[in-house]
Length: 273
Image (cartoon, rainbow, N blue to C red; front, side, top):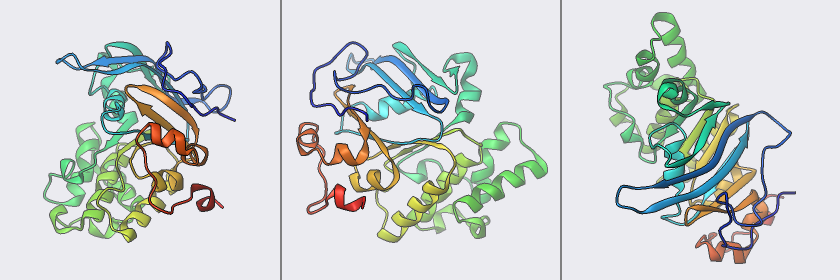
């Protein structure tokens, strides 16, 4: 059983004193973050020596209040931001200037607003854009596009303009643009935001069907419980808690300290029965 943090004290290595290590001795690690620290040019220190290990195939929710450092952390995973200290390894490969092309294939980011990722005249061209830029051509490219759209239930929309789709459909196409790159890790920023209940359920079914490591940044605690057996709470640039999602969400004091709230009347223990 992974201990759940009950303190906000910072310890060396960027973890609260009770946040237990993960990933040792089981599945090979998809992601290893060690001592990651980062400050923005204005001097704001966003991360304080964060350590995080994610075994291959695990689905992990990254929780925390606004300003906790969640987005800063995930932008290090494929080299959009460069660590001030510490390191990030993806499948054993360090994130570095000379490995960025392969790292960005291995780690796919799905942004909160799908319109940030969709800019081509048709869905097909949007999904083909990444692999085509990576040198995939001809039948291999078409197979990548077809397979990615099938995985998100959008194969019948390949020739549609993205702006003619619903918001939920555009989000699924945004996921397909990442899947077409054949990633090892899928990182999603607030995937349930602005979705109606049907689109929310459809996306959950898609994400549960994927044989990938998934890291999901979210404020939607019931969605985290539905999709991610494990959750990590980030607060003020350190990991404050790391453990089974159901246990973390059942700890009212922990949630209160880190400004996290469940919907009124939602019982995480009953939801998992």
